[in-house]
Length: 252
Image (cartoon, rainbow, N blue to C red; front, side, top):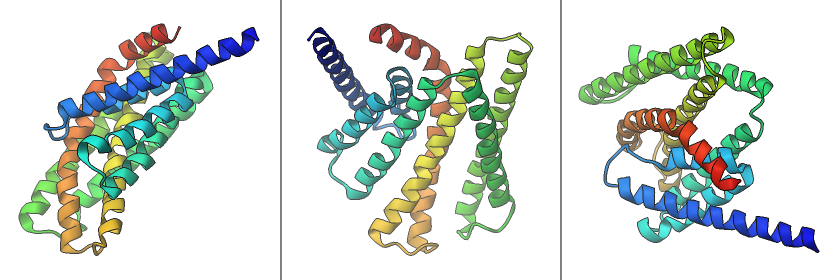
C-alpha cells in the first residue's frame, strides 16, 4: 500500500512538473514570438528533458505542440512539424541525459563531428557552385548565409575537438566538453527543424519542388535559420549547466 502511494505521489509530481514546464515553454515562445530567429523553447525543453528523462520530455513536447495552437491557430503543417520535431528532440536529449556515461559521450562526440562536417561540406558545395537556381540578388544573399553557416560549423568543430583535447589532458572539466557537445547537437537539430519545415509545408500546399513558389518559401525560411542557430548556440552554451543543475535540485 505504501509503495502504491509513493508511486502515485511520484506520478502526480511528474505531471505537475510537466504542466509547469509546458506553461513556461508557451510563455517563452509568446514572449519572443515578435522577434524573428530568437526563441527560448530549445534550451528549456533540452535541459528539462536531460534532467527529467525522455518520457517527461516527450509529454511536455507533445502538450506544448498542441496547446500552442490555442494561441497561434490550428495550422496543419505547423502542427505536423511540431509534433514530429519536438517530441523527437525531447526523446533524443532525454536519452542522452539518461545515459550520460563516458562511453555514450564518445559516441555522441564522434557522431556530432560527422554531422557538423557533413553540413559544412554541404554549405560549401551549395555556396561555391551553381546549385542554387534563384535570382542574382537571392543567390548572393543565400550564399552569404551559407558561408556564415560554414563558419559556425568550423567554430563548433574547433570548440568541440579543442575541449575534448583539453579534457583528455585534464586541463578542463568533463562538464565543458559535455556542454559543447550538447550545444553542437542542439544547433544541428535547429537546422533540421528548418529543413523539415521545407519538406512538410510544400507537401501540404502542393508546391512544385524546385518551382518559384517553393524556392521563395525556402529562401524565406533560410533567412531565419542563421539567427535561430546562433541563438541556440548562445542560449544552450550559456544556460545548459545552470539549468540542468536547477532542474536536478527541483527534481530531488
